[in-house]
Length: 219
Image 1 (cartoon, one colour):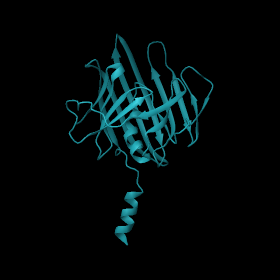
Image 2 (image 1 turned 90 degrees about the vertical axis):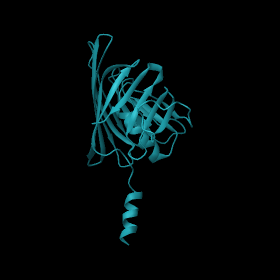
Image 3 (image 1 turned 90 degrees about the horizontal axis):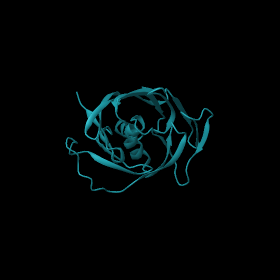
Image 4 (image 1 turned 60 degrees about the vertical axis):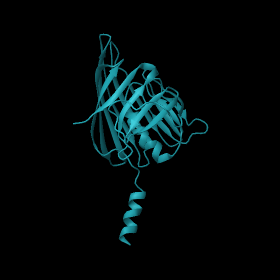
């Protein structure tokens, strides 16, 4: 009886990176521009993913703090972000249910109502240029077994269909462990995520259109 109970507990647990702090180096055109940090914490209603990022490029300092709350099934329940850049300090928030979301964007003070796109069953909250939502994506895709999701961009309070492609022939970047698997997001913007299938921790995130890369730094 005990083995059966333990097996049931394992099967019923949605895998996610363990509570810890994960550090990433950000580079643009192969030049280091800043640091991104993601902290995973257990919360009463699920999991909290906190991000702290800072960068300097073209003479401008930018930084952001964000918190993404995930439910037991890894569906996003809330996102809060505070961004800092030259002469602007916008704040954003997203509150979600399984079917809809209310988004307060950086340029739209009135909440925008967003519903699931046709043919999708889950939301993801991903701010382009930041990491929290992309960090959670490998575990979410594995848990939901879906290749199409509704992507909410907090800053613009807009949504689009996130589509994941099939097998890709992208060469494994130097330094990415040989056991890593890869996710290729085709739309709304190309993103490649190399991640450890045992832990679901991303090791490298590449945004080809921006020539930008986030690379995990291990202790």
